[in-house]
Image (tube, rainbow, N blue to C red):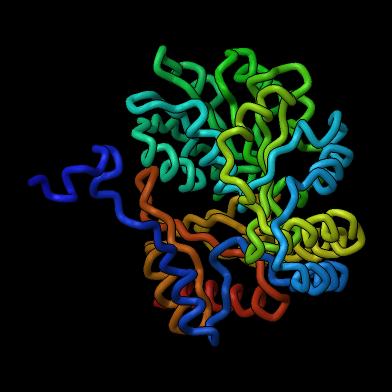
Length: 367
């Protein structure tokens, strides 16, 4: 008789469950300040809370397919209607659903690194091969390499995925380069999880009208501050979205997050407040830490800032350990580009951001 392990498909066998250690730490030790997961420090607006309470009382009923909120998303983005929008349990499920519609074992996904780790997670679980095209580290800046992405295309390439702005670098790619990639005809996912911080004028959603292969994804976890409700969405050509939606689990988005999302999208004042607060604090931290000798501070249009302290002689992992001892959780980054000085800070409350600046200065200037 075969062992149960022999029945697993080869590309799943041995893959561990994804556990976010820093988030587990934050829940186990709530006294620590959460500055590591690109969360919004501001709680949901009153209008969102009202929707949560209202629809919590209807939790005994199955949700519908979300036509109202999908229609609202289409309206905001100048699209035809609900049929141009697919909902997901966070944008993570959206990627999973898109990937399983295009990717077969042995086929390739091109990602631009460093990037959001979920692409690799969802590609690998399907037996896909991840092809990583590194950004170009030059003049204290990480540049997109659209030419490198196009050169990496093979006859096995089934998906290209690029975050705009990029996580963790916080910058945007030139609009003309999106067109170059779109014109390859390969399914092209543009991850716009943080686009609201710079405004929808930076979005590439307009490309979906001319290129059926372009799919734009977003989430309400960041600027809208609803990470715990798990609500994401994809936008694209109605026929493409319709086919991808066929692979959705029925009722994948619950009644509460669906109507809370609608309330959030309609509460434009609350979004404006969160965006203004975030961008002001990004400027504060950037200016305050740009004064530290040999610390590279990457300009960010999102709710996090990437740093490289390699030239100070200190290591990023030691920075993270030190800040935890001072009550703050930062995000470590892997060694890359010949430096082990990488770390990232998520924007917190005003008090937390000033604590963070003081702790970083203290660590980098001590002998």
